[in-house]
Length: 243
Image 1 (cartoon, rainbow, N blue to C red):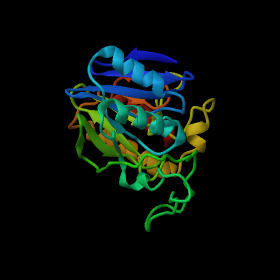
Image 2 (image 1 turned 60 degrees about the horizontal axis):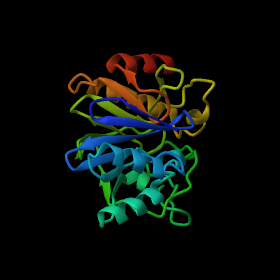
Image 3 (image 1 turned 90 degrees about the vertical axis):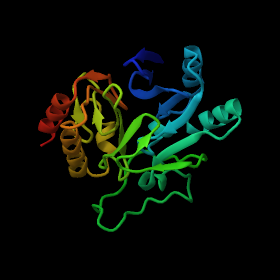
Image 4 (image 1 turned 30 degrees about the vertical axis):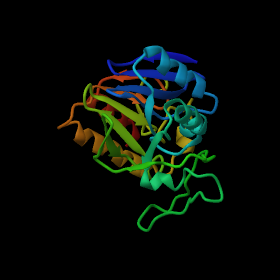
């Protein structure tokens, strides 16, 4: 387990050297981006408490895969008990269908979606979302950006205060270089194996490149790998490797 300050507002918490969650400082406490794998809840809570910024107010999920929601139930229980109210859990409306445990989990495809099987670990959680994020909305200090491909309802989140893009599994930086999910690196195949539709993932990176023309992206904070300084240049590098 490791932790690292990655911007003036955020701390990266890493399990097994590969799985990241991020505590993002807000005026009223923290927004937590993803919850990492099971067994990470106590560490996340400990890091948050040591900063004396306040409690975790929101849990914002990039998507519903198990390595991003693994500690959701434990954290929701701990946080709710600490602040006396249920934690505000948010995920996209599309991936909210993948969040419950079976038999409530819905892996069906919508009309018009690529007819590819939804892949990856989907263990589900008992904690329901309190909010369904939509493309372009501001949740806490983070701008929600729909970036489907890895899953049908995958989202990235951009902190416009400092330009940090919390990329979830839209991008992977294991090895120190940016890759579109589903396109490497070869020695870390798990995001590729778990990616629903690679052409859609590529289009999502093009969307982020276009967005960077108007809203500066200063660094990439991925679900897997190190935080990389840079924005459009990193996105273009990843796109060139994928096409």
